[in-house]
Length: 328
Length: 173
Image 1 (tube, each protein chain N blue to C red):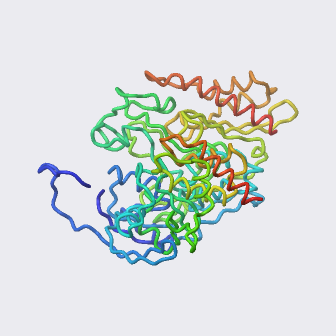
Image 2: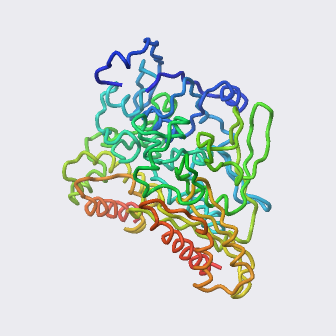
Image 3: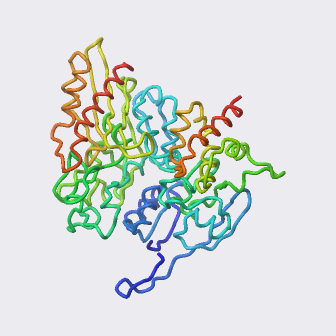
């Protein structure tokens, strides 16, 4: 690991100043320190933002929106009684991620920016990786692709965006507040992450020196009949092979409004609006749910050994919608 | 970091940054002067001499290094030692009472045969204590879910779950 200097920030201004001079922000450290050990991240300066108390609060009782400071811990937010009752998909997306130890450490803002688990990205120098070393190629193209993305991939990168929380946020039209050298701005969460195209090293639309300070979710009746379903190689503590964050608002048997997002299948958080359009105004039953699942996976491009995740994704969306219907 | 450095890998030597860190571990203060890269796990094991927390994967995937920070369970391998300054660190060595009596969770692990080789056990026990304190031991399924961050390659899971269920039943009355 490359040596670095370690400083604690005492306010957001300090953090932004250091960030714009090339420092890396340290929150939970569960991604950054891990990737430093693998020599994937090599920061020369680290600024520890864990003492910025104003970013630790969250409030789920507002009439217009739910507000989460970027340093709120995943475990604390997952356990919030209001969230468990009114937005189960959000709570589930948090407690089904990682382990309780990691959730106690990891911050919401850091979680949104966690890097891919693509083994060729994490594997380091022996493997070509356009995300880690732009222009070097993509070892997954000729390698093991069971876990690679089926949606949003490009010839230069098929690395999956791994976060669960993001699937719930994209489904509920979240916004993030970002502070940078030029002040504060609001960014629709859906615009935070980029598809790899031919620049997979650029993962987000954050400008140099910008940090996420807050996440806001508009209050919606869709929250109550929502769920986050995650399918993995083992039942707990693993990344998703396929996941779905869905929500329904019903008018009798007819769908008044719907939200569908998938995770674990795409290169970025993936809202499936075609699936929502298909459900809205239609009588809900299992065949409608299945049709929505198929619409969500429309355009999926399989590789050599990940085609099974198309059907898995369809069934994950279908099952999630059936669960949401029971909660409506 | 270790191993033979070949000439092609050799680089101009840069000063390794070290810093002073004061850690509070099991109620005792330790003043350390350590490499800035040192994890809390390495600080505990190599600098303070508390070898209960184990290094399994060193990447936050196995839970063998689980300790408490301000009563919350974390993996010490992904915590910088410098980050832990100002907090109360608790390890397996701090569990036994002043009379030397085992913590109820330690005793339950013995009673339920919840280990074989024992390497994961300190992490399992620290995680298990937190699991009960958090209120995440109300059913077998919940125990399994909230203990999934601690792997046991001997497969002592049946005994581990039984030990936690036992302590939880007595704690919650």
